Length: 143
Image 1: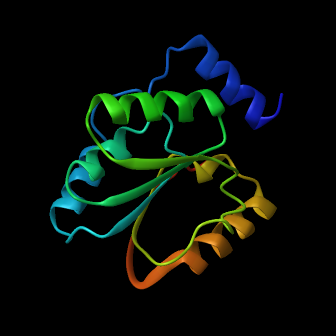
Image 2 (image 1 turned 90 degrees about the horizontal axis):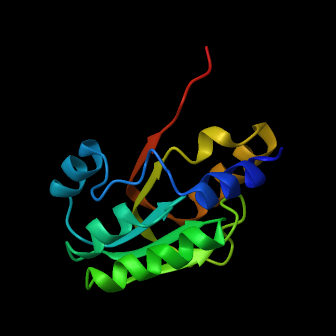
Image 3 (image 1 turned 180 degrees about the vertical axis):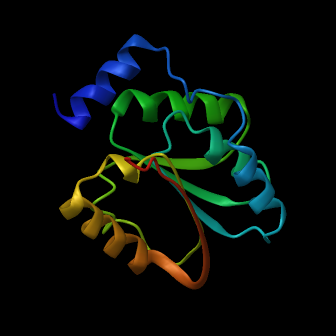
């Protein structure tokens, strides 16, 4: 089963361990120290971090490759009166995004990528982040 198929199955079942109202505390603490600007939520899922950022004055783009996640993120952002733009896209091809972003967050997306995909992901992130940008990345390390 591909990563895409596995994620589609998770979303279809609807019992997502990462479906919380708020983003992780480290994201909230980081955002509290930064002036609002443009932010990218990589692997945004249902948009919890995107919504949080938008409510704090950030101009936010969220990207996820699962259509149902994007649809739900749009609904949740509208219900929260948070303005964010969501894209269904592959995080290894961010050519459609226009730089610069002052913040990018990845809460558990890139660790599912293989080596070739990681190289594409890194190149895309490097292209769109401002020179002084903050990049917060959560990864699962294999032991």
